[in-house]
Length: 126
View 1 (cartoon, rainbow, N blue to C red):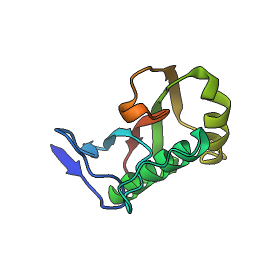
View 2 (view 1 turned 120 degrees about the vertical axis):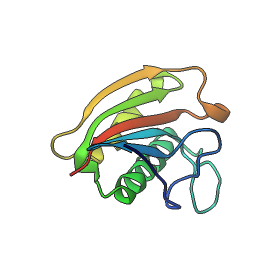
View 3 (view 1 turned 90 degrees about the vertical axis):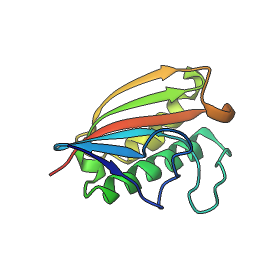
View 4 (view 1 turned 30 degrees about the vertical axis):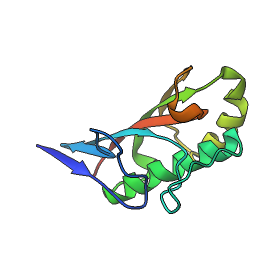
């Protein structure tokens, strides 16, 4: 059975999608952008800042579902340019000191509102 997961600690869905959907022991997280859920504003200062905000939003959704970053199975990362890869990767790596998830990283010219980073994820639930 499908269960919708929401938390005020991550940006609200602004369209016909959920922050995350649980099915069985798997959690599918929608793409997270660099929106601060407390202010409703995008954190655009740098690719590093955008990446950190995306990861914190993912962490909040995982926690709302009773999971954690350690249970991430895979991430799909969209960057506005592969020129941002090193700045993104430095921050991303800090969230996974051991056993990082599988990942695909692609350049995408169409990230919402001219942002540079979007990250979707799939996680296991205990």
